[in-house]
Image 1 (cartoon, rainbow, N blue to C red):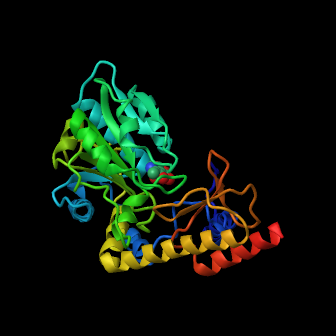
Image 2 (image 1 turned 135 degrees about the vertical axis):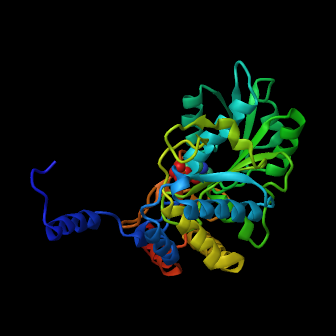
Image 3 (image 1 turned 120 degrees about the vertical axis):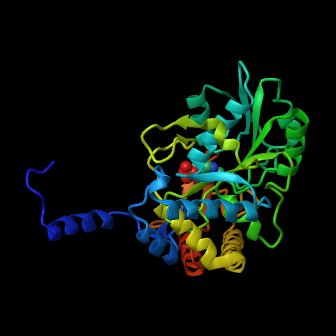
Length: 365
Ligand code: PLP
């Protein structure tokens, strides 16, 4: 630590110089996060000091968290869903598996996940001492129910389906997975961290939520397509009181028990997430998602005219290509199979897509 504090001018000139080293969002084509919506920023700054880890001190903020859960539960066809605000998909996935472990006890528990599952499932299984069974995908890059069924045995506590895969933007056939989850009486956790704020707003939504009887829990991240400030995730449960199974005693707080993973939890991004949902409404979100999908289609078509083939036909706004290089200054990413990956988030405007296509054309000329 410095022995004497800096002047405010010196401090902020240092902070600004560090911020200048960050990449301008205009060039970021690789991220599932985006620039927060202005109403999220405004709401976030109103709730900066709030701590949902001690909700008795912040009852107003705690009621916003309940409203956020209710809004998302309703969007996912289950108004009475339980849930809470997490730090994002990783925490939601860990807690979903923790719930399955608690409520489906087994001496040697295993979890069946698609090969496309986010690496947070590996972390969750490591932490919870669960065996992870990776199911190979079909040629369409989705996990098929009959293949998954072959990996389920009497020690399987949870089947995982992904609604909007991180790498290729695919939605697993959750309807079929729901059937086998019911048949085997196991949990079905749907990782909709990305797709949860896309699929309900598509022209033709794909079934993935609590309307399917086998779906037990859903992870959805407002800090991705929900345009909230970071960190904003939500874990939803079919049974309103399901999370109580994770309760531990918290002697010195304003509540006597908590089921969350984190102790101190920020109320600000929760206010930000709710603000975006209420400001945009269904029609506003449909417009944002339609724009992102249109940009994804334009990008795929434009790359096609350059002779660069798509690696998948995505269900959501993630475009991948059989291509081994991309022009500077664009920040793209690469899948584990070596495909170029671009996420057409709300900050990726049509002019950026056109500029990227032109630079690709120049590079491959
Ligand atoms: N699940 C999916 C499908 C994701 O795409 C991601 C991140 O991209 C996660 C989980 C992890 O989310 P977070 O980084 O917010 O913890």
